[in-house]
Length: 319
Ligand SMILES: [Zn+2]
Image 1 (cartoon, rainbow, N blue to C red):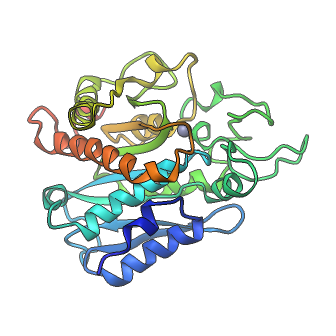
Image 2 (cartoon, rainbow, N blue to C red; image 1 turned 120 degrees about the vertical axis):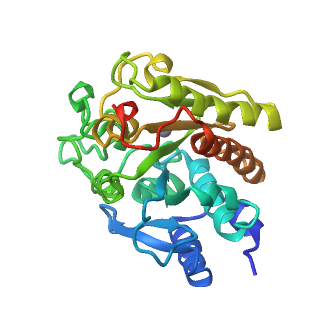
């Protein structure tokens, strides 16, 4: 029996409900999905990362490659969490029609990276973006996780109260240390890292901190474009593709995709800025946005799997 989908994709789930959905799937489908790792947020919430694989009983991917997807790095980007759960739903509860996506990859999914910020956004301030760690001074709270990774971190803002505060040091937040630890656990077999944001209708690749493109940028562009083409073809919604720095006005340090690509040597490290009406699209739009985003995500992963020009060995293209 699969879940009543309207109860999962007809509204925004709380952190507790997200975890309940995941642990429920793990119980029902223990041959397909397991808890890959669990960490705790600053306020003590449990952060689950799950692994989906046809070879779930084998501890390691055994030469298979990993796709890693995270969501909810920015607390107010609620729709990203629904999209990540939709990916889980498709791969676990609709695995027969998605078997080609499971053939080449184990999927590692972290659907709610920053649960403290998310709950604060749900309960108190819808536009909250950061973590919820009190900073001691000025009664300001929280760090922008996507400025807190250890890659060109120094160019981020040291202003405590800023919406994009980088933190006192790289990885000052347990939520970003959790992602760093997941990257380490996946070494050296992670080929694709996709970080879900909203709502700028764009698929972006490194670098955010510099206009200098990665060596394999053309291949990364192809993957991004495959996602954008699929979405415009199926739904008529146009995503822009390009490097993060070509999209942003200022250089951004400490981003997760730059860390993934430059430091962890993950060859494909993309941000998907999901198209939606604002950060909190109406509940009746959630299912449609999930389906639309899933079309793009599938196309990107298929592009990875089929492109003869994309090397899956640890080669020069991985810089
Ligand atoms: Zn964001």
